[in-house]
Length: 445
Image (cartoon, rainbow, N blue to C red; front, top):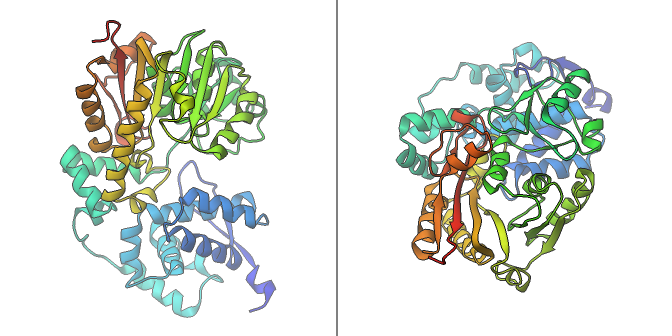
């Protein structure tokens, strides 16, 4: 086929709701790109977002809207992989999955495939459109792995699990956090409205803003000047559980790229000392330019080898607040990271819980009497959440649980969560999070 024919472009309308462009322009070349990316993602060797980012860096000729088409298709397929695979037949190739998804998941008509598929594929797509089948068990019905279905069903019940799975199969909204060092939320909302960006206050977080749709923001003046950061509303609530104050010594024990670190620094009004520990030099390197943009001078990124590093031990008994946003399965983030449900396993979760326990034990040593320790994950599994906290409390009588609901209420956050914070996408419209607030007794227990 000639190069001219391969690059012939035709408009294809996508019905994706308010967050999708009303019109895609799809070519054979773009379909080939989508197929290649999908094949790489389905190896499940690397996170889907990393695969997409790398592919787009290597193919800079792909424009912003075309990248949107590829990403929407790939994530749609991964969310509904068991269903799409059944539609596409026995041992389907990545292209088969892509075509089946566009036909059934996106509802493309025969006309929209003209010029993009062969005659044989055209006939096969008619069979795909007509195919009906009963799911083979609850896991397939919910598009979850069977092991995860069993775990979540035991913890939440089948009815709640159905609602939870439906929540995971919708794309996540785009939430921002107003940087209160530079702007208040009301002013940020007004600025967005005046620049044509539709935005509203988040339901719970006092500094949260939710956008309608997913506009490109990296070149927005308010992003460049550090007035906001992208951060899920659920993640923002963890900062309110830590509740850092001016002049305190605070530790973000697993800082990563520093989203919550930046929030804690702003809540401290850039006073005191805020240590950002992480084992990844690459992640900490990403934090430094974000600190500068946010206007923070109290953050001290520290690379550590492990949770028992000597750099950690130097702060023993000195910290007012310690946040442990522990490495976890990430299964609460399936709206934005749907590949995780296929990349995790019972064995990987078991390994994670051992690591979580070790990290929490090490972090506890930093907390001074009367200080606060917050343990959090973006997992929905009790093994990584309640079980870790219960084991910690049983072995550390000098710590006691505080009411997460009461801590949030002190700061004007009205959320009925009881002693421990549990956020669910279908209930709170956030990522799934768990958090427990612990205080070190002043008398040592």
